[in-house]
Length: 161
Image (cartoon, rainbow, N blue to C red; front, side, top):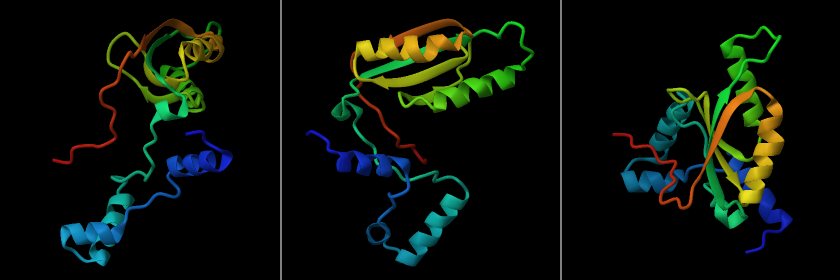
């Protein structure tokens, strides 16, 4: 399916979390509770930040983002600049958050400082992302990209048991 501007705009809004909401009546019917009870409980879960947002889960491959890669980064302290570890991490995280290719940002245990989950169109796009958006940072000591050949499961569901 070729996406026109309207379809793209709809997907952007749905993924932003501003226009997705649970169908209270269907949940109430399934759980045999009143809609008011379900709505009250959902509001409590939202207030406690257990429910963070409602979003549409979009298939990246259907939008031409067929490459998934995990990029491991080891940072280097900038020479001649006094900065704490926390401040440097915050700078990196703030920068990574602005990159549309970056789906997830993790701080792993071990020798790597960051693990990024990145979605790109193809290997050439992956190369462009690394060479134009990561390497110019100038404070990367070491980096490794793990390109996934196939993904069997990607989910946002969290077991509540």
